[in-house]
Amino acid sequence: MDRADKLREAERLLNQAADLMDEALRMSGMESRSGDDSATIRRIASDRDYAGSLHNIAEDLDYKEVEQPVWTQPLTSPKKQFDLAGREGKD
Image (cartoon, rainbow, N blue to C red; front, side):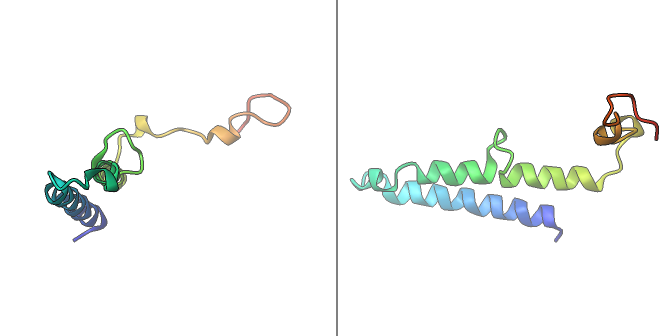
């Protein structure tokens, strides 16, 4: 099992834990005590808009492992594009 697979398994388990929390607290009168903890757990696990979610990190790991077309890679580092005097750099 590679890193991305482990993150996906953790994502699945966290979502399952959030579901269990919701089920256990439903109609208990204590729902407010957990606040939005299950929503927070789901955000950490699966939120596509949260860069730190396990889902997005797993996707990034997959992306890094696949060779990308040359046109998606910069020809030069943005740091070395210009020299300190403001002239275009020569690599």
